[in-house]
Length: 114
Image (cartoon, rainbow, N blue to C red):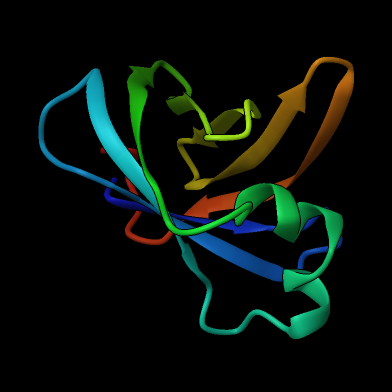
């Protein structure tokens, strides 16, 4: 898995999370703007959390699990992201800062949890 698409909870395209390859569990990842994002989604709460400033590469933890794959990292504003992709290449993401949590749907654009 080299790319994960993140969507809002309502299913609107938000971002693509690119992961470096091939070394696990430590990788680097970066958010890229999804080509179908709307200005409303970009300006939304989720958009401001995923894209808080300039694009930044984050060290991330990547772990294959029995049910798929998990990716975790903290962005430059302290939001802790957790992305879970199941064997069916679909999953979810959430970002947490203290007691504040946002999240949505996710899927692996290239499949098979690798």
